[in-house]
Image (tube, rainbow over all chains, first blue to last red; front, side, top):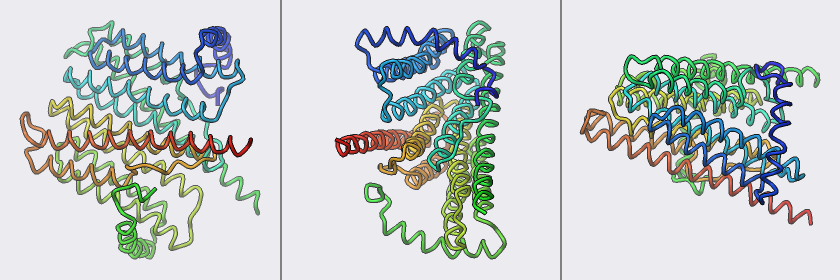
Length: 217
Length: 217
C-alpha cells in the first residue's frame, strides 16, 4: 500500500497534479495513451544503450524521462476516459520490458567495465523487481490482492536513478572508482527491498487465503 | 498451447507417467507438495552457484534436477488431492525465482570469464522468460487466457540445459573457446523464442478483448 512506501501519498498527488496537464497536452497533439506507453518503453531502450555504453548520467536522465511516460499514459487515459483493459495490459507488460531492458544495459556496461559484482547485482535487481510485479499479477489472477509492499516501481526507479547519477559523478565503473560502490549499493538496496516486497506479497496472499478459509467454516 | 510447443503432448504424458510415481513416493516420505516446491528452488540456487563458479556441467545437471521438482510438486498435489490456491501461488512464484537465480549465476560466471556477450544474453534470457510468465499472469488477472506460445518453461529449461552442457564440454567460456558460442547461441534462442511467446500472448489478449467487444455489440 502507498502508506508503507517511502514515496508519500501527498507526493504522489503532487506528481499527479503536474503530470495530468502534460498528459492532456500530449493528447491534444494526437497521441493516444497506448502511444505514450510505447514511447516510454522506447526511451527505456535508449537508456539501456546509454548504460551499456557506460554513459551513466545520460542513462539516469533517460530512465527518469522514460519512467515519467508511465505516469503520463495512465493520466491521459483517465483524462480522455479511455481506460481500456488492453491499455492496462500493454502498460503493465511494456513497463516490465522497459525496466528489464535498462538492467540488461547495466549488466552490459558493468560487465564490459570488468565490474562483475555490478553485473550480478544488476541481474539480481532485475529478477527481484520482476518478482514484485509477478507476485501481484499472480495474486490477482487468483482473485486476491497483491499490491502491498515497500518497493513498488516508482521507488525502484528513484533508487536506480540515484545509483546511476552517483556512478556517473564519481568516476564511473573504472577499477577502484567510488562509482562502483554507489552503483553496487543502490542495486543491492533495490534487490533487497524488492525481495522483501515479493515476500510481503506472498505473505499477504497467504493471509487472505487463511481469512477466506476461516470465513468458509 | 501444448500443440504449438516443440515438446509434444505425447512426451508430456510420458514424462507425467514417470513423474507421478516418484511424486507419490516423495509423499510417502512425508514431503508435502509445498516442500517439494521449496526444495526445487533451493536446488536451482545451487545450480546458480555452480554457474557462477563456471562449473557448467554441474550447473546443467542441477538445472534439470531442480526443474524436475517443478513437475513433482504438481504431481504430488494432484495425487494427494491437495491442490490449493496457495500451493499454486507458491509454485508459480518460486519457479520464477528459481529460473531467475540460475540466470543471475550465468551472468556471474560469464562476466567473471570476461564474456560480456554471454552475460548480456543471460540477462536478456532472464528478462524475456519472466515476460512470458508475467504476460500470462497479467492476462489471467484480467480474466483472460494467456497460456499460448512457442516457449513455455519446459522448453526454456531444455534449451538452457543443452547450452550449459555444450559450454561445459567445449572449453567453457575461456576466450576463443567454442563453449562461448554454444552458450551464447542457446541463450539467444531462449531470448528470441521467449520474446516471441510474450508477443504471442499479448496478441492473444488483444484478440480475446476484440471478440468480447464484438460479442457485446
